[in-house]
Image 1: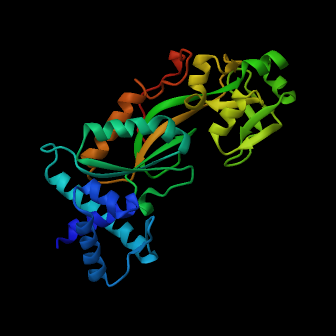
Image 2: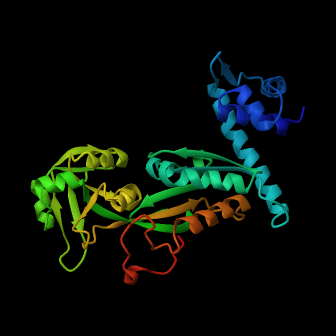
Length: 316
């Protein structure tokens, strides 16, 4: 049997968690999928999969083999793409990672759109808030949301997301609208717990400073903070990609929106490569086109951005 086909089949079984799902994805029968798996286990002399009536999972040896197989298949796809660059439609697998809230809220529909536009490309997406090593874990692309980056990766800034102090209308009616940052110290607040508790909320400008808050809720989840803010539990500091739709609808109201509470940048990062596969380049182009007209624009804020704050496009 063709070993490369067997390797592609094995990778799909691991990714989809079953022979039947892999068979449907690859357009072959479950019996043929089983033959390809048997071919690999015979070649390697190792049991690669643990099978139950409900799921299929790689063994320890099988997981190591899967990671090597993915690297080999990606290298093969890259070599073929380089040989036929600009002469054929993009193909192969694109492996990407992104933070949970940004991935689920904003990246997922763009991944679906990209797959529809390029039917010969498959995507493996991992939405996680853990620190991912692109090179060691074999990812093609990482979406990073950060105030600044110190990285040896290369990439592109896609958009900007402003921070807002937000609260529910009912909470503001109950406590009154804070007129100074210092007033937040005496009010119920909700804040991030990761990577360290965010107890000091700072602002920029001529009177820049910070106020120490005493959060009623600390969470590593921006969505948990948003839900608590919507319920009137407290005032929260959230990025626009999390709270922008709520501000636009009035479910949340901005507090001292004329102040600059900071911002995050959205980056597309990838390992340094002599050749960038067309599927990766086209996906980054799609993100840049769909997210913002300019990388210093905030597409999620319902308020006009200060044009003077815009700078030129910055590659890393």
